[in-house]
Picture 1 (cartoon, rainbow, N blue to C red):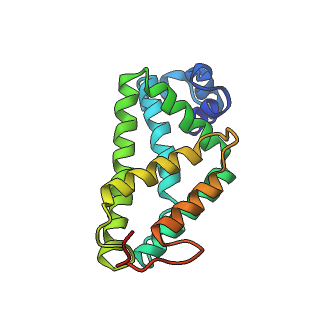
Picture 2 (cartoon, rainbow, N blue to C red):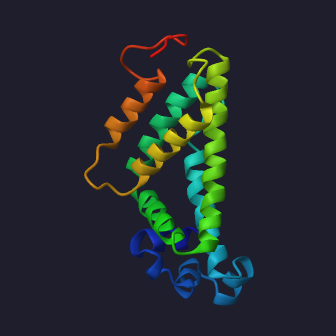
Length: 184
């Protein structure tokens, strides 16, 4: 799976060759097909690996506001430290628009990601770290979309600025903090 991940990062989907993956890990193609019967199953493994990289940035302790702040900052560091993750995510997203099976896999991945962030937001509202009128479902969608955007290969955007502003809007970042009862 990691060999396939590296191939996709370096050469895109068009450069993914199962025979080369097998050779890189020192197994014959039949052994590779035993574990990954199809190229699609291998790609599902790559998606799972990429998602685990993002999940590894979640800390199970602290307040919900601390968890969310630390998560945003850890994702920022992750995509800076592992640019191949952005390349793979970009390839997966582009390919999923033309590949229904991959689209389903990506939809499941984003569903898990969205529910995880939504759960943290719901706890933040319940704990009084965020305004009670926050729609955790909509805010989770904004967070996931922002994190998706900053994880993609840079096109000259300003991911640090986007994440810092997101932290300020959520009341968890630097700058003046909003009280949970504040209204706009």
